[in-house]
Length: 279
View (cartoon, rainbow, N blue to C red):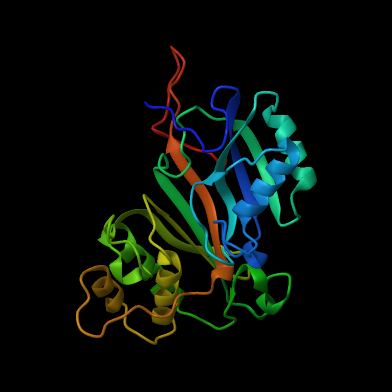
């Protein structure tokens, strides 16, 4: 495979390192660098420039939106050969702001691309149903609905999403060049620490705002404001005035983990088809 190089670095003397990141997205205008705005990518590149005295571009596995969090964002950067993974992990922990944490650093192959090599991504969405979610220690990391919902309807709606569907109705914009079809491997609602429910969804790809539109529509169904049948219709080619419900707030959404093809095994050992980089 043709090696993939990051711009602005010396491909001969530098080596590539893979970072697993966690961040609280509350105070960020998303992952991607934007002029005059605070972003996760911007903070990382500033920290790497502080450590190496050279601009070090960082590429992530996905562009989380404003206010969205991550417990398993994957990124890659090229650094001088003197930077060992453990050294970089400690150095970044010392210079990054408190709302970004480097969970781990490991070597990356020359052709590894955190976005294009991913085969699955998993997102979590926390839906707060108890009065306790109004607490400042919870409300910034969930949708503090604090109202009852029909859990059985939520779970039926989640089951409807599994499989290959067209999610055009659940995309904000700008997806036509790649199409709107996604393969959803997992979609379910689980209990969330006595506070409410967590929606867990794994797919081969996600469209812009897709999870938030799905959650917003499922919650409306579970509150009796629209029929369950609407969801199936929206997954096909909706006609007339049928639309999704407003998207759920970004505060409840987490990029949880990213799965890549497994590395080749040494002779005499077995290998699974994929590996999860955030275990």
